[in-house]
Amino acid sequence: MALSPTAAQRRVIDAADPATGRLRGTPAQLAALVKRGLAFRHPRPPHDHFLTPAGHRIREAADGPEAAAPPEAPAAPDTGGVFAARVGGEEAARGDTGPARLREVRGAWQGLLELRRMTHPDGSTDRPCAWERSHLVRAAALALEAAGHRPAGPGGDDGYRVRATPQPEAVAVYEPDGDALRACAATLERAGWQAGEHTEPRTRARYLLASPRKV
Image (cartoon, rainbow, N blue to C red; front, top):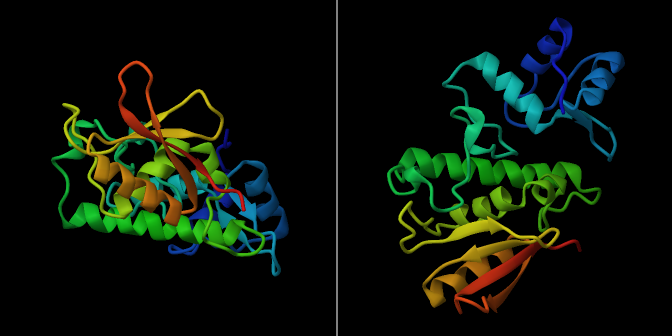
């Protein structure tokens, strides 16, 4: 869990680059932010420091309710107005589909690609990063929503639903339309996931079992 920053550390956070989250400060300040889980040190030279998703949330809280969402990390729905990818079944899944929502989704996806680039030693963006592996449902949902797939509404109508599974590093993606389900699989594979189609023994419903590709 991230620890609250001191006033001096908060000034460093507030001065971070708004697009990339790049930090400038003394070595002691940057090391302290890393220890608190609010920053990370890039593994490649020149080993710059960047805000983590928790650091971005602290920075945005200071900017007020009109602040932009953190670029690299969609947050869970209970974060009080911060961007959340639609997993399907939410009340808002049908009501908020206008241009503003599209901009938020595209911005979050571009930010996630930047996080991949910054955190992979080889700078690649073609496979999921550590954040996605620890937020499987949200990460898969963001990949789908960013590609234009429609999430299911609260009534379980047509559209995708992403759900956790008992299997490690795997999510289930449901979509009642077979062609749409296969399109979801293609989208996830392009986004660096492995996806296979399966059938539930009891209901005979078809679904995808998707997991982040490692190489």
